[in-house]
Amino acid sequence: MKYTLAILRILLGWIFFWAFLDKLFGLGLATAKEQSWLNNISPTANFLRFAVSGPFKELFQNLAGLAIVDWLFMLGLLLIGLALILGIATKIATYSGVLMLFLMYLATLPLEHNPIIDEHIIYIFTLFVLKSTKAADNFGLGNWWKNTKLVQKYKFLE
Image 1 (tube, rainbow, N blue to C red):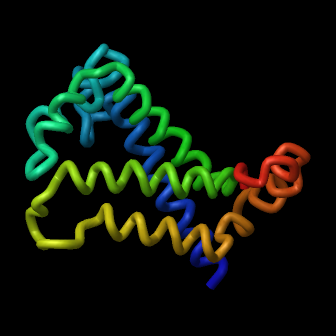
Image 2 (spheres, rainbow, N blue to C red):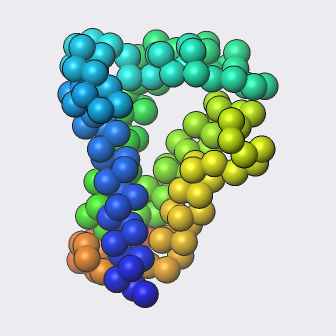
Image 3 (spheres, helix red, strand yellow):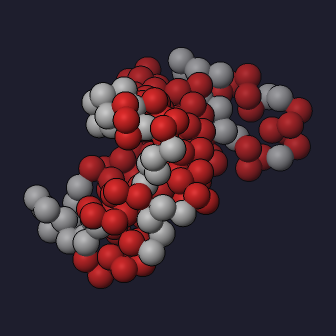
């Protein structure tokens, strides 16, 4: 079971990391090359302008195109993804990932195919399971990371 959870951690990390790469370079899957962040196209603007709905629509639309939102989103995808893949700083990655996913969930209310649950909620619970089962201790750098002087001094970095 511990190896299954470690693989799940890596796979979920890859989802975050791939989204970063695709939005940065425009790899042609979810993001066309001409829509990449490297071509000075906001990675959040189209979603925030046109895809949000529900009671928080105006709030999210007001964030569209803001550089700070783009930077936070892209750094979040990158760092959460790498932390999960490598098995380091998983406590921060968990809470950051939960926040990012919950905001994305709120932005898409009401849900299209299910009135309550979508993949964002499943990923949120997956992050909590991975954190609580110490999935970073296998197939990653988690054990080494926890024993560094920095993490020993600042436990929140686990």
